[in-house]
Image (cartoon, one colour):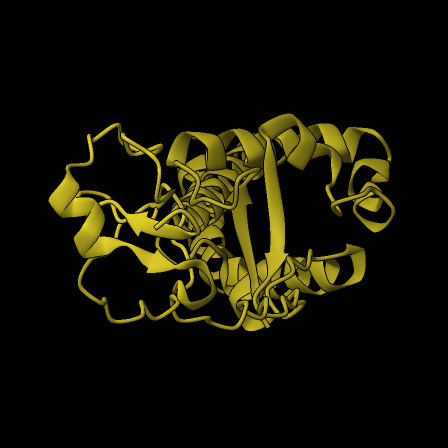
Length: 228
């Protein structure tokens, strides 16, 4: 017994055979406990640590599944949707087409007005020069009215373009690419008079400004974009 060891019935800790109390949990040893659990030192089983009390075997816990790190999706910048603006020459061709379209309406009507005013002047014995001046003023006002309604109505419509611009794939928008109102289209139309008064330099500006804006576009806050 002097050379043996005993094991605590409570915590299983190894103690000397001469110990009266368990060195781990303090449980007192009785004579029966000492005689029942005494074991020669050479045959003692492998001791258990103080914090490892024997208990039922537990199934090993599987480690959490490992997932591969997500591969970042490459990002591509689409150039197909980049805004393209209408430059000077394509807009110049559109102006010619529009002039022909408006002329097909105003030409015959202006001729009828001129004939009617000439006959009326002759009937009241108006001087020839006076009849010609009256005819020039009336037909000029009629042509300006038709040209204004033509541009403002079509550029503020769902088409956002006159016939010439439609034919060449052009649209008039505001600076955010939205459809403009009839009022803004009207302002843009009459701002062209300023572009004319600059000896057409206001129109030529569409060839070298950053977003191909003519002077009247800058005044009205508009852009001419290409759709094809």
